[in-house]
Length: 408
Image (cartoon, rainbow, N blue to C red; front, side):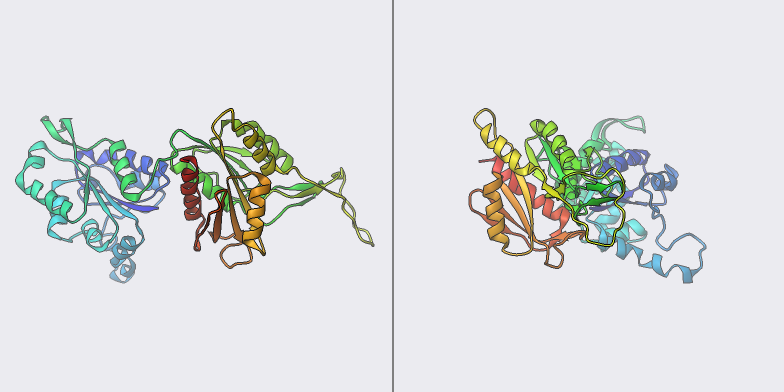
């Protein structure tokens, strides 16, 4: 998700740097917008270094720049307004609150406020007398009436030497409000979720291997979504080109047997196991120690089945159910025909609680795409078909269903 962080001209502006880091830890993409007064307290370079992005400081680009070079910057507020999911202003001065309340748009931030349809959160910070002044309270009343979310300031010793309300709210309080407004839940707090991802590689010889077309994107989306929702995530991954989501416990593996060993070693820690990896069904019976040279005739490979990790887990979890609460087990099924029939059969054979099935022949549902079209099949006989969604959105829908299964 993308948010714009407006920083205005108060002593608390330096705290916005810490706020940027915490928002990034929530996996939020932060674009900083600074007012001219804010630059008197902290430099744009600080935020540029933290975000890796240009900090927006002027409505029409750098002062003195040629007007012909500023066509893009002249409408940049519209572009930012359309792509953000939330506008957060912290610290928000009495002046910026007055501008917002009166609809005055005389710089980038105030214009962005009027141009965006995204939710707005403001965290005021100012002198106690300014905070308590009727004009400020009337402006806040107007903003609240329009749906603006206000994070009230804390009480305490202020930079001006006075004591009272007006200190910028604690970073965690502001982040919690952002989570609430964006619907970023922490409903897996205290749980451990084991996710497998990617394809496995089964060596034929030192230069060749058997594998499949899985990119790992679905499994990595599940790991990131589950981590965002508060879980401790163990990600057992075959080789991929993907960046490991921040904060997850990454366990790299290569072959199906490697994955089986890693999963069995960590399974006892998990409340939920989601087997999103595309594990090779077969491996060479004996990998050659030297490269197989090209010959004139055909080459026959002797293949043997790999362990069925999902079925093994399902059998063991069902057997142990009487001793401890049932770990929810989720499997995946990539099909090319008879989706429902094959998924239901797999659900029964593997002893899973849910199968996430997709027809990989559908556009937008195959391998190495950023979207997926899946149907969720559960033990109670229910089927939940989902429309084409991003893999991150699919991941959250799967997690919602897992919580339903846990509540029974």
